[in-house]
Length: 176
Figure 1: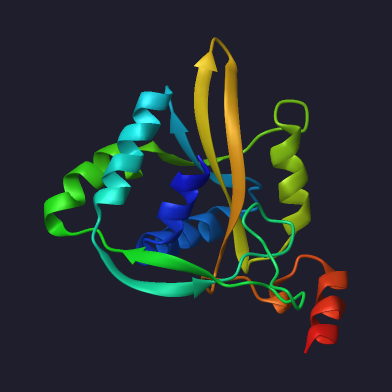
Figure 2: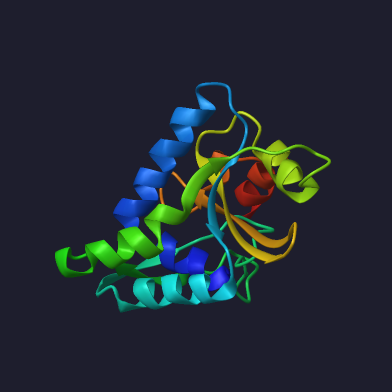
């Protein structure tokens, strides 16, 4: 599930489109996330196969925000860059991408009782429009599902001024 988010993050045009979709809902007063839903792990594995087959055209440095699943620091305590492969959806792979990846995405809202982890992450974001939450959900059995959450950013990587934590702004000033 983490790999799926990583691969989607690397399809820059698609990530930008997801951000615009998120903003459209948020500006209508909705509180939720961009969610990819899979009925089973085989569907997720097929989506991963399609994403991994997209051609890599570049690599960019990626910085996640502190406390995100992929965040790490170098030996000096500064955020460590990660090399993110940039992939593109080519014409010959567009049909498979649409079928296995894009057709599984929705804007999802929930309640504190139904999905407390999702709601806690959304509370962190508040009114922030510089980042949005992405979720990958795989149905397990009956009404049980497993979820993985992470954040995608308006400017691709996270910057301290993007929030959401005021104390992180102070911490980043001390690093400079």
